[in-house]
Amino acid sequence: MVCNKFSYPLALAAFFAIIISQAAAYDPLDPTGNITIKWDIMSWTPDGYVAVVTMTNFQMYRHIMSPGWTLGWVWAKKEVIWSMVGAQATDQGDCSKFKGNIPHCCKRNPTVVDLLPGVPYNQQIANCCKGGVVSSWGQDPSAAVSSFQLSVGLAGTSNKTVRLPKNFTLLGPGLGYSCSQAKKVPSTVFISADGRRKTQALMTWNVTCTYSQITASRYPTCCVSMSSFYNSTITPCPACSCGCQNRNDCVASNSEIRTVVGKNASMSQNTKAIQCTSHMCPIRLHWHVKLNYKEYWRVKMTVTNFNYRKNYTQWTLVAQHPNLNNITQVFSFDYKPLIPYQSTNDTGMFYGLKFYNDVLMEAGPDGNVQSELILHKDMNTFTFKQGWAFPRKIYFNGDECKMPAPDQYPYLPNSANSNLISSATMASFLLLALLAFW
Image 1 (cartoon, rainbow, N blue to C red):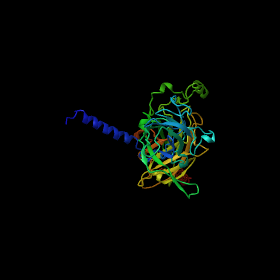
Image 2: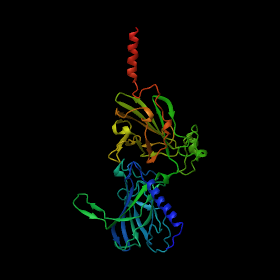
Image 3: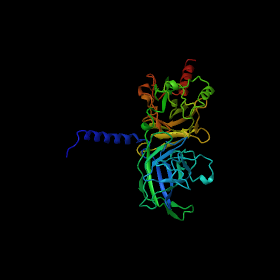
């Protein structure tokens, strides 16, 4: 057998490409996070079947925000979609060969989107019609599900003749997700409302979609700045944290908001209008070490939106810091510890209080949300030296933010002790000194 001299290097390159792509989709802070698409065949029809498709977001802190998800696939044969409930195909395709009843979609590669809220009841199904917005599992499991029903024709009419769709794609709402091939799994079991009867799907298959930040964007989408009470220096976001390729299209911070909106009124809602900054990020998280107490210390977090055309609904913020294992109180945000590994408890998720600050408004006077944390000290590990008081990682809406270089962190002055003397103690010392010389 004669082997091509280039076959081995090509095979090796392909192997490493697969490994790297899988590693890029792996999130160490949410190792089991994914979006699972379950396809349940509920009944057979003369030329196909009726199925319920359920999309469940098992990601702890990454949600799908407006304008929502877009799901696509390629039919294995020449199937058509006769009708849909709870969603719609964006393009009907060429249905000219049909007489009488016209299918909802005749495309071999249909693209489906969720219906908007407020559609008539006869077009709705449970967990549908939210404009494609899906919460993260960590925020609200009950809202982390989206469903629709479709009637498929020109398909198999039994478990042996049905062919699984292939090449699934998911936009949530942008790029970043890669989906597996459909795989048959045990049929889903349904329990009646009174809990006294079980039924099951006639056939079920699953598709698993995972997210990769590298696939979603070439550059980060957020950055981190830092400051502290013990150093007057403010460490800004690194220059061009989110890439400076759009610097010519940014909006000067002293521009009138009405002028900016009017200028872009005829443009797409997806058109970016980022405020001109050195970092050029739409989102900045500022971590400020605010106060030091005897047994506690206090941090203030501020998230600022620099995008004039985008609100962030149901935003999430994830921080990694060793002292989050002993957080005492959180003001203004909801908080949930994330413990992906039982041996480590150093990660927490923060998100807005419903109807109070769960929407981060567009850039401007109201374009920020903030909260303060009180953390209990572990005297065996606590210190202000070498940047220990600052986070190891920050994620916003599931994307890792650009951090300053460690040597740029606000440093503790050499003359200061890591256990800084509190202002009350200093005042008492000065008072005793004055009394001694009175």
